[in-house]
Image (cartoon, rainbow, N blue to C red):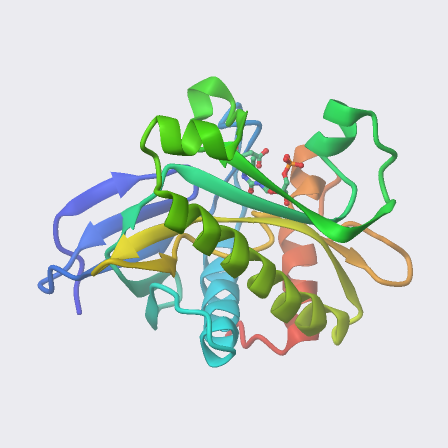
Length: 237
Ligand code: TMP
Ligand code: ASP
C-alpha cells in the first residue's frame, strides 16, 4: 500500500488517501505540540516511537474486544487505518488528578479519583478545546444520544483494560484522551493512543513519563516514551 493524495495535516500526524476508499495512511511525524499548537518542536525518533506504541495499544484493545480503526503497521512512521468520519469530540478520563482539572477546580495534583472522572471537550484548538456537556453535544448535533452513551462506555472499558496493562509495567495511568469516529454506522476508536495524549507516572517514584515533560520543558521526552514502550514490551526497532 502506498500514499495517495494528501488528506490533512494535524499537529503531530498527517493523513493520506490510499487506493482503497475505506483505508487511509497515518504518518506519525516527529513534531511535538502543546498548548493547542502554541509550542511546537521536532523530537528525533518520536514519530517511530508513537507509531509503534499506538499499534501495540490498538492491538491490545482490539484483542480485548474494543473495535478500533487500526489495520496494520506500514513503515516505521506509518500505519494503515480505516477511514472514519471523526466526531469533533475528545473523551477524557482521569484516575488521578492532574492537568486542567487541578487548575479548573482547585484540586491537588496526585489525589486518586475513584470512580474515575469522565469529561467531554470540543476538539477546537482556536477555542482551546473547551469543556462541553451532553446537552451541547446533542444540541449542536456533534453526536447522537446513543453515540454519547457508547463513548462513555467505551472510554471506561479502554480505561479498565489499559489501567491493568500499564500497572503490570509498574506505571500509573493518570488520565488520557481518546477520540471516536463513525464507520459503516458503528463507532470505532480512532486517532491514536500514545504518551502524547495521556499521563503516565512511574508507580514507585511518580516520575512523569509522558508529554508533560515537553509541556514543562523537563527534557528527556522521547527517552521517557521509549522507557514506557520498553516496559510494555513494544518493539521499537
Ligand atoms: P488536560 O488535563 O489538559 O485536560 O488533559 C487530560 C488528558 O488528556 C491529558 O493526558 C492530555 C490529554 N489531552 C490531549 O491529549 N489533547 C487535548 O486536546 C486535551 C484537552 C487533553
Ligand atoms: N493536545 C493539545 C496540543 O497539542 C494540548 C496539549 O497537549 O497541551 O496542543
